Length: 193
Image (cartoon, rainbow, N blue to C red; front, top):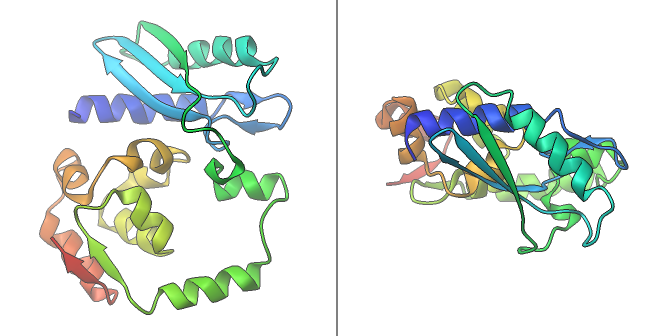
């Protein structure tokens, strides 16, 4: 994916955060309804799902998605493609969405699990950044400090992050890979290139 396309996808994801599911009052990005964005010239194709098959809001959401995407400079047309696999489940929601809907587990239980995970910290540069961010709580902040400022855009990890690796991101953002490696090693990680 070229840097220009990555930038357009970022801008589209930001625009889609303004599309709110009227039943849940949470945006569709944080709900995990966006499965992918393809760019072909000035046309964007948004792959999305719904919380349930036959959702009465399908047309409403598709119309609002198109309106949001067309606000992005460089995009002249938008197609919304409904997909049903993988099947949507609440696990696809971001922590922010779960918190907004009152679905977060007991915080002390969560911290205990995170403490156990910190014991063995390995960053494999061939693993998608979404998986690394899910595994290590401080991953996003380390990446942000290295110059990956877009990593904190809600929904970015659950879309682009599913396929983007650290080396691909570093190349796209023109960030020295050795700087990233050093930043993780300073935080006690073992880096596998």
